[in-house]
Length: 246
Length: 325
Image (cartoon, rainbow over all chains, first blue to last red; front, side):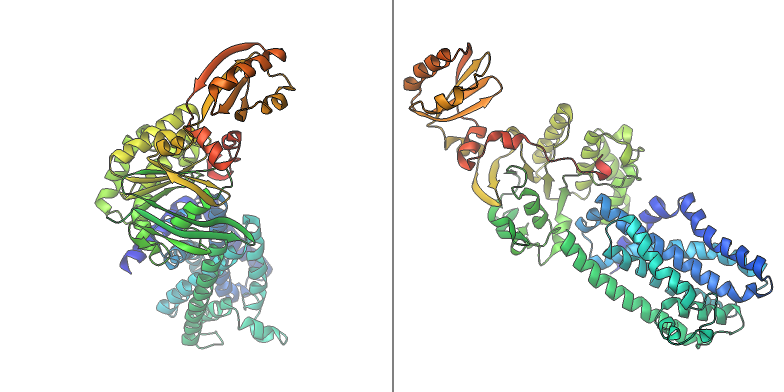
């Protein structure tokens, strides 16, 4: 187990150094949430605080899913994924390593956005431990979602398209900009099936003096459930696709 | 003693098409075993099943006594594979690639860099150690890919078409590296469609055609299968167009191969056919420039055993894109 964790870390470290920590990727990861902040600030400077949890959740969603989906599709395309399959590694180690790299990238981007937004908006973190836990669990859930997307596609552009197919509806359905309570039926049902809903709600507890509508502990437990569920699903489909494609 | 490799009834279907058809053979420890066949014969599919990259439809392979289907991770610790396409990480340097492979194969931390540098020196890559893989020439990429496969001191090295796409000097250098690796006690399994390469490198050869093994033996024994045949090679100034049909009808000539301006006649009655052949050639206006008698080569044996034209063995696969190009 220790050996597997070490190897997963090496996979993540390699992905970080060759893909994630390149200036264009970092700047792209930061660009999107910053543009949203300014857009909303100029439209409604007073209400901007309300959407900070949503913006942080969105940054995490975009940075984590994109990279996992692109990196695996790219490595599959150039034949480099084969090197991992050839090494003495279990599929779960490969999957965890890839998820870890992408999650760390998401966490770095989110950390940069958070330390920029919180002081500027005059916010404080109420439940620091839960805040960190929400970010980590959500980062894993979104990265795994990216892995799930990468398994089903062959080209990098397909991975991008598929990622957006999932991500953009999530922005509107998960309480990033509009409260779920104000959505017409049956949209709230869909909202509660998506992990970003619990990220945003949990962050509202932590940053907006418990303004979340779901108990904080429930948000954390559901996010953990999503991580386990998407990991199991990714593992099953990843293994199946590898057997088909290789 | 346990065979280094034992393959039993390995079979692979892609839909209704059988790519590998009940292939069985053994490879002894310390030998170079060649898998010889034309492109599309099933060589790569077989090697991929043996190293656990492709799931067989039936059958299995034991590598150093372990079943690849039951203990894939343990088997992968003992083997190194050099795929047909050099597929290391383009963005990583030569040294970075080797260290990453060492990490994945569980080489102890203290040894990773020492072993990587040692391999770079051994493979003549020391001066390129800081160059990204994608900036290396095709020959150097190939060398580095072999070095990466040896990082964890494997017992068995698999090489899939090791010299395809390389220039003459790089291919020669690589063959020397393969022979040097054998001297160090490594068991080597290689696939190739170059008959001279198989003959010069391999202790034993399996000839595979259309997914089936036709023969497994030493190059000498394979050649001995056609030793009763003699070959008359005649060099001409040009090959008259209507010549081939007439020559086929000559009594005692079993096979005729034309290559550029040389014609090879396979016969068991050299003394009886030589004069009629020369006479026939002269009648068709061809000027004879050289006459030789040859012993059958592995190529001749291959042609006899498989019924294939040896020219089909000289066709390279199109080189894939990706990091190689």
